[in-house]
Length: 114
Length: 141
Image 1 (cartoon, rainbow over the protein chains, first blue to last red):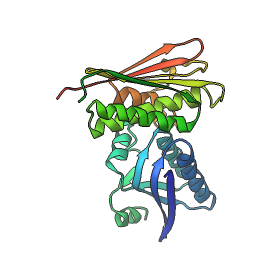
Image 2 (image 1 turned 90 degrees about the vertical axis):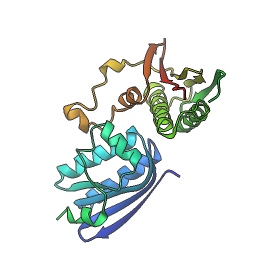
Image 3 (image 1 turned 45 degrees about the vertical axis):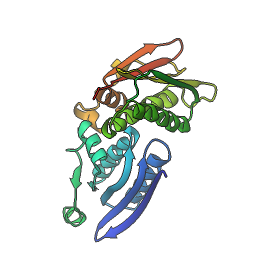
Image 4 (image 1 turned 30 degrees about the vertical axis):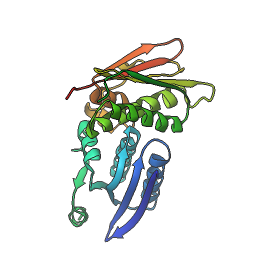
């Protein structure tokens, strides 16, 4: 499996449940297209639920950074939810863990956009 | 852990399928070397990043260019060699991805991850191409 995305609206926050692998190729391009579409449709507050992401490579990390920059520059917010140990480890090594607003609990994460 | 030395090698096309295949081959031998899950993750990711560099940045998906892949283990070292037929690159000119504004660059983290996850990284310039050697020390139990 590459990557599967499911969008939900929780109040004003768009939650994207991501499952699978975010790697160079189909995985990262699927995520990139989905986030671009949301930005195009003026979704400002986006919560990326990575609880079921089994693997992410440097290309996947690049997509997260790129999306963060794009969304922030358009006045929106991109936050992360439910990092696996592997993804958290990678964000810490690349010093991106403190760049992103990372949450463990969805309700808390949604409230943080207010 | 197996005591004897072993090498497996393959010539790959310049495709993303080759990246997956090489990662699987390396992980199979790494398991035989007795690495634990955390190290297997790190070896797998290093091989993936190195193969991506060879296929994407080195050979630029050119169907006429191949990637030479060899993975070997001895009682002391687990070694991966990946050579492309591209124009070559100098890892010294890749900006430090954890420095200042580079944090926000979309790319440029592959070499950094390989250096972080493996014990040694060596680059040899071929004519044409680049060979990268990754070494992970086998820790005896």
